[in-house]
Image (cartoon, rainbow, N blue to C red; front, side):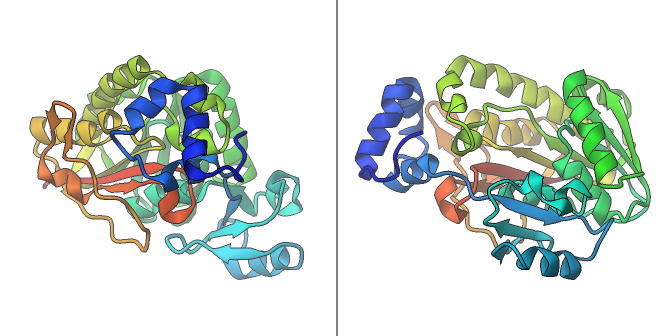
Length: 316
């Protein structure tokens, strides 16, 4: 862990010592002092109240007797909490709350599901967004909760059970498999596998592990996944694409690829969240202006993980 007491430029130099390739890359994306200062800060703990089991008011009343809570502006059920180990609380063990990073709550809010819908969660594990979608659907309808790895599915199933989700059908498929279900789902969430730069605040292993070649490989996979998800979406439906990383190759480039190859339309996400201007030019690449409607969230914007979210309409 890098000391927060260092001056901003010293913090950046510590990042450079750990992974010089990362700093060289991110100098082109966000070279502000605040970016590195917040990347070095421990991430604030946050929770989401599971309204399938209890009301927000009752859970907040119970938690407030032991912890300080701060509402998360973009999610009514979300709160920052000063608990060191949320998993040790009785509320967590009973499934009344879910430990979930604050910016990671945005995709399910943006998806705007309703009871009775058929929803595809293409990369569902560990289940934070799946359980959030289920509570918004009030356990009415069906969620296809998919992931590609069996060990991740075990965690997903455990979280679904703990939170009382009864409408999820768990599948183990490569997300590209769903392209065969043309015009099937009312809503699609693609929380895509990514290089996890936003998660450096949780664990510096993501900084040590970062490699540009992996970013390039993930970008190719993300394009295939979003094309499959879009094909599976009903006309008139919405797809939300999200990553917890900040590289344009994994974000704006993926959305640009979808726009250039389909009739997809990007829709603005109207939530009280601070964000950066999406990137329309990067190195030798230029992206369509529609990417400006996406949310690009850097750690210093809201003191959260870095995140990227795009909401896509499939015209009827």
